[in-house]
Image 1 (cartoon, rainbow over the protein chains, first blue to last red):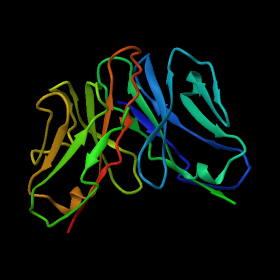
Image 2 (image 1 turned 30 degrees about the vertical axis):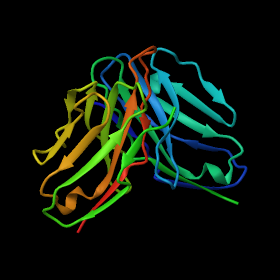
Image 3 (image 1 turned 90 degrees about the horizontal axis):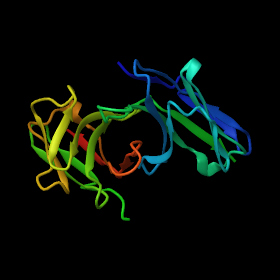
Length: 115
Length: 116
């Protein structure tokens, strides 16, 4: 069975601080995809990144970076120099590489950036 | 591309009534998904279509739930004899099977159902 755990329910930081959101997953598959989505107060899930399990390169996109470590089954997300607009609920998700297409989501981390 | 659209955005109904939601995917996306999200939780998968074929259904999709995608374009999700436990946000997503197999799913704004 697949499972995603986001142990941090809520995080609150002051603007310009760096913040890391943790994601740990379980799967029996040897190949799979990992995703991060952002859900702002408007409610619509916004796709941020997809990572293939066979590609362990870390990725940086502007103030966002992702650290994938297959050995510890973790896919953590860091926001550098946080801004108030980063306030949202962030979800980590897992999907099989072949076969089942469903996304398995974690419970989400509510991030609040205070001015 | 216009995004995934869902209608209605909000629905309040009395227990025991039937409700139907509509989802229009991104044009030319041949996969369409339904998820349900309750307060404080991540979305949970309900079902998905590839073109008009319903290929996967979750155990969450009880006999009171039915989904269709008759022409491989828009989809409807119907809940019969609604119960208070059906109150949730119903999310629709779409993706394309062309190109990279990673085919990320793009979500609509959701339909918030309240059963009183």
